[in-house]
Image 1 (spheres, rainbow, N blue to C red):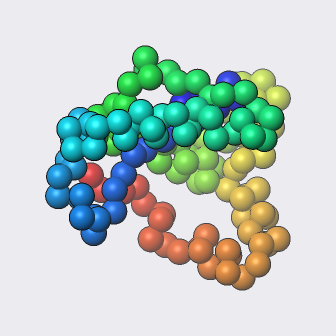
Image 2 (image 1 turned 60 degrees about the horizontal axis):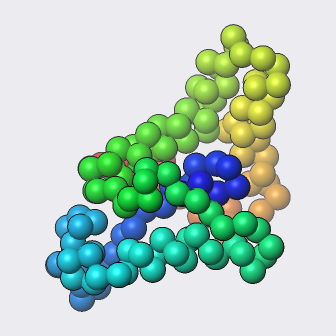
Length: 139
């Protein structure tokens, strides 16, 4: 999805305990067993911000839902970008970029994220410090 001019990935998933879960192994199975459901999901994402006065969202990739292999690759890439950001690796690699770009990356760096934690309540703080989310998911 393109949300306010920026890529905003969405992943369609199902709870493993859902009664439909045994039937869904990839995105094509959704249309097979629940025709029209993907169209309804797309339209919801297209229009959900309109009541807030924003324009409809648009979609790339020919408005197609991509398969599991494609989604897993995007998840891995996003996770790697996140790791580079919070470890400071991204900031260290930006030395050849403009001061403006370096400032933007620094703003999102681990040190800034740690500063933000100090301003959160204890419940949120515990969730962010959970080591279960430190490593990339295994696929």
